[in-house]
Length: 111
Image (cartoon, rainbow, N blue to C red; front, top):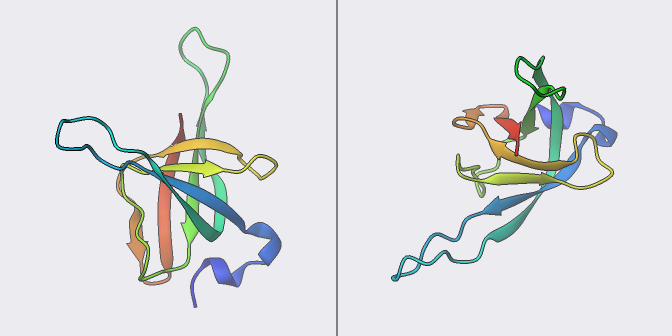
C-alpha cells in the first residue's frame, strides 16, 4: 500500500511523462516519448510573490505516486497534467525525485 492509494480516487489524476529520446549518432535529437502514468496526486508546494517586473507569481507543485517497480521518474522528464485537471499544464522536474517506501515525491516547476 502506498501513500496515494490512501486518498479518494477523485483526488487522483493520470499524467503524461515526456521523456527525451536522447540523441542519435550524429547528435540530432530523437523524438520525445510520451509515457502515460496513472493514479498520481498533484498538490501545491509553494508560491513566491513576484519580486521582479512580473505580476505573475512563480508556482511550484508536488506530484505524488505509489511505488512502482516498473517505472521511475527521471530528473530530465517533463510532466503534462491534462487540461481540465487540477494544476493542468506542462511542468519540469525540479531536482531529484524522492523515492520513499510508501511512494514517490516529485517536485515540479512551471515551464
